[in-house]
Length: 252
Ligand code: G3P
Ligand code: MG
Image 1: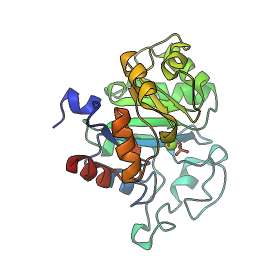
Image 2: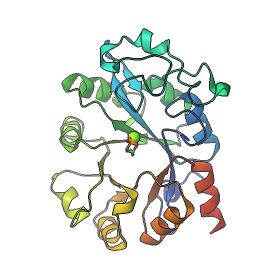
Image 3: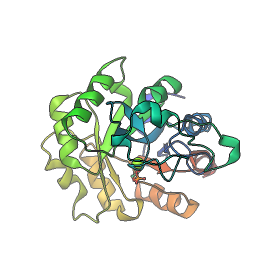
Image 4: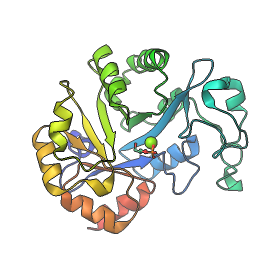
């Protein structure tokens, strides 16, 4: 089913959002991981981006290649050819040897259009990243399947002002007094809240949903956490195990 109701989620059945693809079962932020998240029925996948030295949008969580590839170095100081030469799969398991660090466009090309994409901007590298990202998202009906999130809320505001059609999601790990009121401070339409999963309660969620916000907490990997989030009434759950979450929700 790909209807609006499922994509938007609801209090009883939050949407499944694959974190860095299906990072619990495949090397994070690789095409193998995104493919698996799609096969497991994710409604949306989350990924992280940085800008390379030559201005390409690179999908990687850390600002260096060190932890998740067989090469080292800061992404913003490397040319994309060098980044593409890295093996991003072997560190996770030899069965994923040869996986590459993807360009953002490869993920959009890979995933069927009904799967939404949550692009988390890690490198608030300034105007160039803003421009390259918005240029890319403006093409090919990509804006409508994208939510851009970041811990840098000034960056999100800047992007939203430059492109009013962009859907933005606020990432944070704080026990805010009133989540919906914080979003209202931006004085622009906020699509979604992405709080740490342990820092959102039922009243927070109810008030936010009443204000028209969606709530996609990160990163919950255990059944007890999923059950709590369902009882809280969130609209989506970001998880490293989208397949397990999907099964868990169906069995409830
Ligand atoms: O977007 C949710 C989550 O990915 C934020 O934290 O460090 O896993 O990117 P991190
Ligand atoms: Mg992330």
